Image: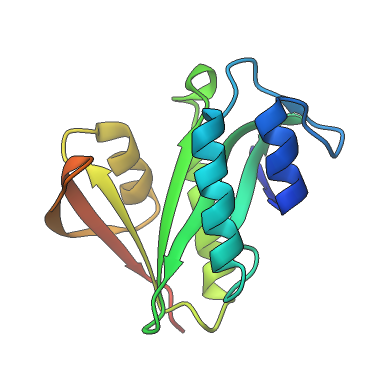
Length: 158
């Protein structure tokens, strides 16, 4: 069973150094390259001006095994999420559990109407995470860095 820990700026600093705080260990392979952690920290700081928490560490058995973030929040209430699990902890349901926890949180957050996410069209595991959590495929788009992406959405408005 996974739990989410609100990711604060000090947590990102500790995560980047590989020396995690709050009495938690960090998975041996880490949860992202330092430059990715920097980008996610910057995104979380911007999104946190609108809604908090903006990012979470995914924790399992006292170990930080992944990250889940709100990447953007549109004026219409569309919260784009991203998530990732350390390669040495993938395939065990942690991402599905983390997304389920974010969905439950979003249902209580009045500014969020819909959760949206993108996956690589050929990347099956993230697609299954979204399907397990009730997301529907709503289209495709082309990204100049990531190539063809499937677009997903879940209505969380009450």
